[in-house]
Length: 88
Image (tube, rainbow, N blue to C red; front, side, top):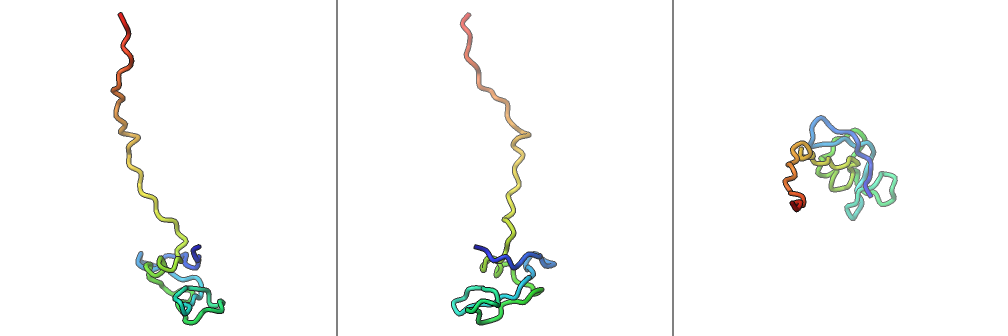
């Protein structure tokens, strides 16, 4: 289950922008500030967060980019298999 509190990209690709106030718990989990287990403030709305930290805590709701498909359909080789020979 991913927390969906980071949606906007910052000016660079190394950071994302927080959209909610998040806190850390005693055991290192990231929770909303309204959670009873929240102990330390992690970020406030509008604050840049390192992309590595956002990935570690499951904050990114972006799907992984799919790899570009190779152009194999345009360069399909000819079928050189021979059919059954007829008896003459």
